[in-house]
Length: 331
Image (tube, rainbow, N blue to C red; front, side, top):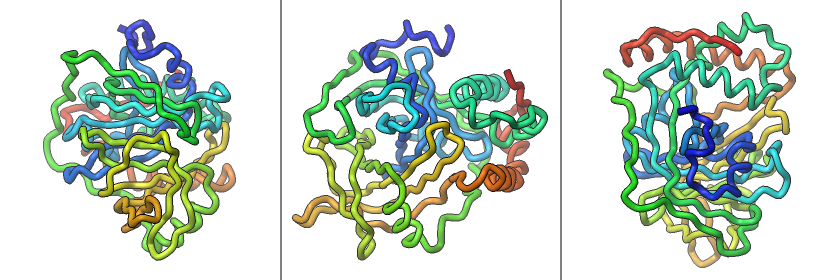
């Protein structure tokens, strides 16, 4: 079955355009301790699934989902979306990690990424792109939606519409976990995270909060953050939002241009608290971020610098899965 066969989708048809047209969504997975980690990523529609990917050389997003398949996707980024006025959609679902066929994964990513984000590689020589295996070699995470909630806009001013998958449906298993140890983080988190957070909260256009719901799934919703003060960020949340229980939480602050040639993302980790003066995120740290900002030349140099750090991981990560390093076959 073709991975983009919309006939396999059983969610409401009115959401098809949202899922197909979104340039980014928020992908939320859970750590071993059950704390949410949310990062922006580009979604793709599959055969009855909504799919995101991560690099073979930085597999943490996939490994969290392999350990705990309860994940969420929030479609709430209007920048560059296919249609104006699209609803905000929260998808909670079951993740299956696919890294058993790395060459097929890489071929798929090269095909669909170029089709969906043509400006990101426009004008770059194919010879150069083919050398970027550190980026194009992919692990896919296929998410079967189980619960979907949607609102007219990011204000969440009304109760959502809702859809739930039929009980008892068979859910796919992930590919077997690779042998050996997962590689360590390849980027260092910011040492001065307060400076990073303060600027991001002032300058970036979008912010989304994630907590773990009582049913074990991440709950990710748009919020309007205030300024950082005493390591806390006040949050305004629409009255139609689902219940957000105090506890481990993360706040993703992000933005990109309409063509997705630049992007900046920051994930703040901490605890959601409410001492009677409204919800606040008590920030403990910021995660390392993959941001591409500045001029085209600066972005290209920064990207290649990342490549120099990631390239040595390729052979080891392919070998952990008993496979050869894939090639980049551009369409």
